[in-house]
Amino acid sequence: MDNRKPDWLRAKLPTSKEYKEVREIVDTNGLHTVCKSAQCPNMGECWSRGTATVMILGNICTRSCRFCAIQTGRPTELDLGEPARVAESIAKMNLRHAVITSVARDDLKDGGASVWAATIRAVHHRQPECAVEVLTADFRGQQEYLDVVLDACPDIFNHNMETVKRLQRPIRKTARYDRSLWVLEHAKSRGFITKSGIMLGIGEKEEEIKEVLLDMKKVGVDILTIGQYLQPSKKHVDIDRWVTPDEFKRWKEYALEIGFGACESGPMIRSSYHADEQSDMFDVRARRRAMLAEQEAAKSAATVSV
Image 1 (cartoon, rainbow, N blue to C red):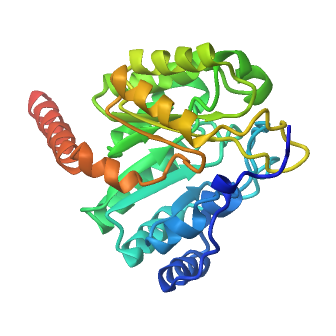
Image 2: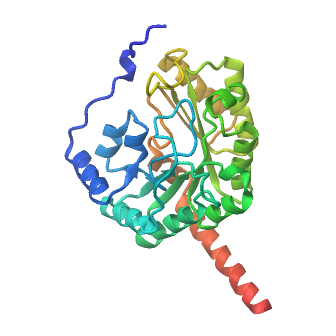
Image 3: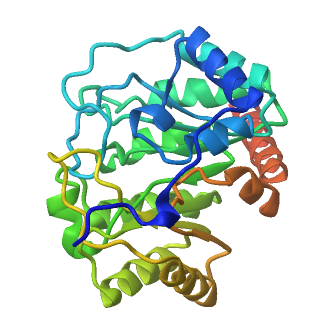
C-alpha cells in the first residue's frame, strides 16, 4: 500500500494561546499525558480547547502492545503525590470533563488501582463539577482491584477493546478479548456509563468489525470510538490500509443502528475525542451524586446494624 498519509489525516500545527497555557500547566506540574506519550494526532486541537488526557502511574508500561507508542519496560516510579497534583492541574485548567488514563502496571500487586482511586477522589474533591472519565487497563481480570477503581465513582468508565477478536494475540499480547469484555460488563453491572474503542486499518475484516461491535453492545457499552491506526515506528505493526472517511461514517451509522448511545468514528478519532460532549449527553454528574448517596446510605445502614 501507499505509505503516504492521505490528506484527511493531516493535523494542523498548534499555535493558540490556550494550547500554550495547557502545555505550561502540564510541564510545570510534572504530568505525563497520553497526548504526548502516545503521539495523539489531536493534541493540538484538544489542548487548544483547554483539555488534555492525563496519564498517571508513570510513562513506562509493563506491556508491549504492537500498536502503541508508549515506552515499555520496567517502571521506575510510583508517585503517591500524583493524585493531588493531577487534581490541582485539572482545577487550573478549569475543566468540566477530565480524561485520565495510565500505563499498565502489572509490576504492582493491585495494578495501580489504589492510585487510580486516590486520583479520582482528589479530582472530585478539588473540582466537584468536573466529570471524570477513566481509561484503564484490565487489572489482569482481578475483580477486587477493578472494584477499587469503581468504588471511587468515575463518571465514565472506559476500557478499549482496540481490535477484533482474531488480532488480539498478535496486537495485544498480554491482554485477552474475553477479559476485556468482562471488564466492561462488570463496570456496566455496577451501574456505570461504559465506553470502549477500536482501531481500523490493522488487518481486520468487515465481518470481524461487526462481531466486536455486537459483542461490546451485548455487554452494555454505551459509548464507542473508532479511529484509524497510525504506525508509531517501523518496530510496530504495519498499517494494512487507510480507511476512508466514508467508511468511518458507515460504521458510525451501524453502531447507532445496533443501539450504542453515542459513537465517534473518523480517521483522527481517539478515545478522548470530544469526551466532554458525551458526559453532558449522559448527565454523568447526576449519576455520580446518586451513586455517592447510595454509598453513604449503605455505610450508615452498616453502622446502625453493628
